[in-house]
Amino acid sequence: MKAVTVVGARPQFIKAAPVSRILRQKHTEILVHTGQHYDDNMSAVFFDELDIPEPDCNLGIGSGSHGAQTGAMLAAIEQVLVKEQPDWVLVYGDTNSTLAGALAAAKIHIKIAHVEAGLRSFNRAMPEEINRVLADHLSDLLFCPSQTAADNLKAEGITRGVRVVGDVMADALAYAVERAGDRSQILQKLGLAPKKYLLVTVHRAENTDDHERLANILSALNALTEIVVFPVHPRTRSVIEKLNYAVNSHVLMIEPVGYLDMVQLEQSARLILTDSGGIQKEAYWLSIPCITLRGETEWVETVQAGWNVLVGANTDAIVRAVRSFKPPVSHDVLYGDGKASERIKLAFYKDIFSQE
Image 1 (tube, rainbow, N blue to C red):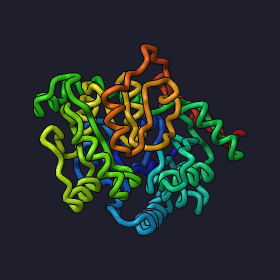
Image 2 (cartoon, rainbow, N blue to C red):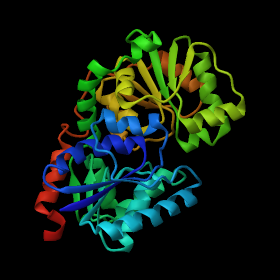
Image 3 (spheres, one colour):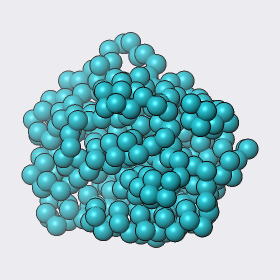
Image 4 (tube, rainbow, N blue to C red):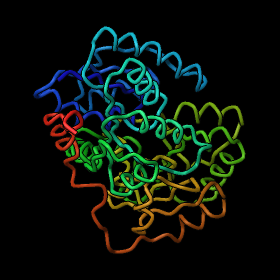
């Protein structure tokens, strides 16, 4: 089997890593990097740390409006597919790279496998929601991280090719935790003691493009008394600089960090505040309480389990949650057993879809 894997953003590098390692044992994989994340700290470092082969093709698309970026990716990916003639195209998650890869494959009748299928926030104002819905409806093989995701697909009439395999990010996290202990020096570099700081990430458009929401979040960080470590996404930093918003000295605004450093920061934090879906899951797997800076989440099981709370971008609600939120003692297994990539490999070995 020959597969083209389309990635473009750091969450996709993480998800693709365990699948690529396993697929390449028996199959041919062409790894295409769209260039959606092009900063070294957002891109290149991940390939080294996660032991992912260098991309076979880097399209170098870069940033831009949703339409311009997706259109440029669509045209460039189509050229790769015409040249390579793969049996499958693999897309991951919910970015513009995901949608462009799925559209390019569908237009020229190449089968599509969507890893992390079936997630729904039920908020169509999110660009990611549009991307994931369209990718799911175009896909032939849909790898779901949970039964909830499979149920979401069923509600939309998608039952063919649906497989609940668990979450490949659990596979990647286990790999990274082993490596981070030896290779990450981020706590020493920042002078941090375990469980003596909060970790914050903010990158979603609903928080960065809405200046009032972002200002509310920053106000909450300023109101806290604990050390706050804030690796700042380039887009978020640009908005903060335009707003000329000053943060207090206890808020450490640092450059984005590699995955191993991020895992080290996550597992050593007292609590995590984020609008990232991936970090919500990682917080749960690492048994770190999580405050989500959104009004909804695709990872509803983490909220139901009591380890994640949704606070939106309300300053007072964020501060109250940081000071009072305590998860339960119980901590159930969610999103599989860390062997999702093995199940994905088996699906391709059996060529399940073509036999149904």
